[in-house]
Image (cartoon, rainbow, N blue to C red):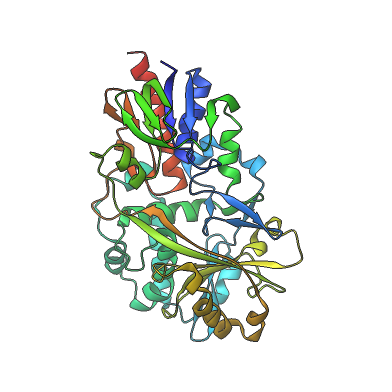
Length: 415
């Protein structure tokens, strides 16, 4: 045997698994196919800006992240607790009345929803915060849309706020995602800050990597197949171990383990622009409440974390969901046209930085949605899995799956 454990995949799940094994003194080797670790959570430096691979945010209330990460060294910058919503040709501010009571009062009479809707938001918040997090995943389940309708929300607040809000999180404009995931995310947003690390979202996997011995991590090492306790690399090299962990995203995992059943993945496109001035002032998420045009949500990232720019320019991130099937090269014009309608001629001067489509951005999380805390990582005969497709399609789910798998390996090795 070359090592006790081979970890295939250097995303958050694989890094989390490796961190636990490192602390336990169990020998391991982590293999990452790309030229750097991080998987879907990476940040590139381009033209003096930090560009995350797709718009992502970090909820500080995530329980697994709280246990595994050092927030102080991430230097987190926080969003305001609420959103700016585009509707009827104007931007309307909708804030959490519990966390920004004075500022939120100005939004009471906005056209985003009725006064009764705003009362029901408080009810929904109270229900999401009741009991433990694990309780959420044992409650009766339906789709997000049906859950919102059952609470009594009006069509106006569903379409103008909840649809673009949850679509931005779950990449699902139809709101067919499990109501359990909606309540989990709503709890995370209500009980902590929504943040960006000063060094970009890629700082999260880099922090995890710092806990690993450099000799135990290999990049540009793609695994082509698994045969019993041996991984065969595309280079022809064979590596054996007592245990093998497949920690890739779901579709890649099924190529290595054909019998594995994983949900389909959703895609999202992301475009970045550099602007002389911020089109939205303040650390807000901007939501398209009008329901027309390619843009679902946007954010001036430098209004949240000024460290995202080394220049005096502002960094604007735009997310496209339903139009993500188009080539990224074809998205700039319709997106810029919509931005022109929102912010006027100054958009013509914005510098286009990058457009990209993340094909496997997030696993679908439809009802019936399995309890993530019942995740079973051991498939038998020393073959293990971890990844957000087995828990929740979140940073927290990936971290939890990695830890859970490492603990299962520890038990298995000492059986």
